[in-house]
Image (tube, rainbow, N blue to C red; front, side, top):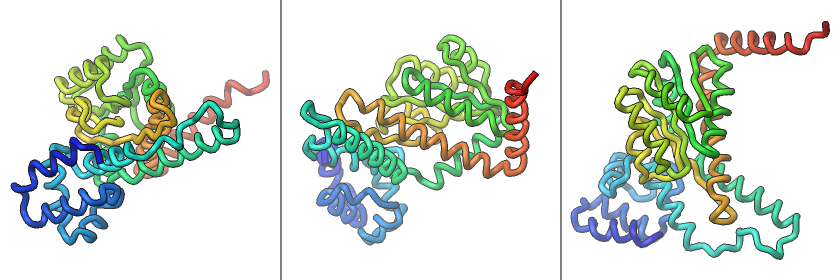
Length: 281
């Protein structure tokens, strides 16, 4: 565990109740044990799920998902770099490491997904008059992919790859709409400006990021965390796209599930429209 979380727990330890101290002792000894559901962790420590939620907030995290992400991520920093791609690796070794990194990225990301967060996010989406998808750089690609998916459900969706147009779209959304902001770091200046504009308009925000303690996380009404299990420090943002795409896939399929036959009708209509392009003259 990285010293900053360990120091934070030790500093607050005397102020904690007996249940929270029992949880603190458990996590200080084996931080990777946080990679379970809140109910399993509660049973292991003999505390209530509410105690775990309070403990996370006491440490400065928004919820248990953020605390779990930080514990898993920081514990992994102590592991040696044997999984990194090296100059002497064969093509087969590189391929195997890429496969393993993607597998780990997805597994850890899905460990962090909370049913309550998914339910809240889908509720915001299905009741929105308009949904805007926003992201910069690689996250812009994820935003476009999400826009492409959500065209298949009976909702009005917005997206533009040009930043100024995206900013204008954001300024036109209202509290009756919903925005999905995607950012690996959660610190991108342009993304934060979009968040500021949306918050001023009282637009509910669904945030997807790899950084729990980012300004963007603090702005989100619902936050999802995309693990980035990079093979090299320069590739972390690349691998976070894998988990970002998986999260938007979940939100899309849950939305399809909600609309049922309505979504099927929209999909069929789109298929028929696209088929017109391929009809022989």
